[in-house]
Image (cartoon, rainbow, N blue to C red; front, side):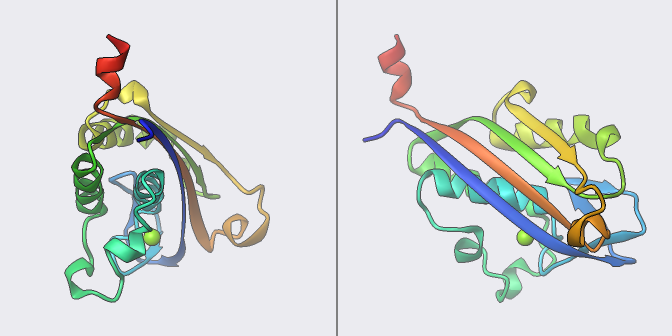
Length: 167
Ligand code: MG
C-alpha cells in the first residue's frame, strides 16, 4: 500500500451580478458571485477534487452531483467535511494543501487568514498546513474580464500507518 499520496484539483465558476461570492468558506463582499448549483465556492471545490484525486476516488461531481436536490445551494464546507470523511475512511489524513486562486477582483488578501482558519479546522491540520495564494489573469481571458473565477489545488495525504514507521 502506498502511504503518501498526492492529488490535484481544479474548478471554475461563472460570475454574475447580485449573487453571493463564496471563497474558502468566507462570504466576500462584492457585486458579483458564483453561478452554481451549490454555493459555488470554487476554492473548496478544487480542494475537494485534490483530496479525492489523491486517493483516486473520482471527482466531486461523482460524489456530489449537481443534478441532485440534496446538494442544491449546499454550503461547500459541508462538501469538504464529507470529503474528509471519505479520506479518513481510507485510513488517510491530510498533510498539507496548497491553493492558487485566479480572479481579477476583488482583492482577497484581507480574507485569507479567515479562509485558512476555516479550512484547517475542517481538514484537521494546523493553519500553516493550509496555503492560499491568489493571482489575477492580467486582464486576459474570461477571468481577466471578470466573468469567472478559477481555483487550482494540490493536496498531500498520509496513511495513518506511516507514523508507526517514523517512530
Ligand atoms: Mg464547482
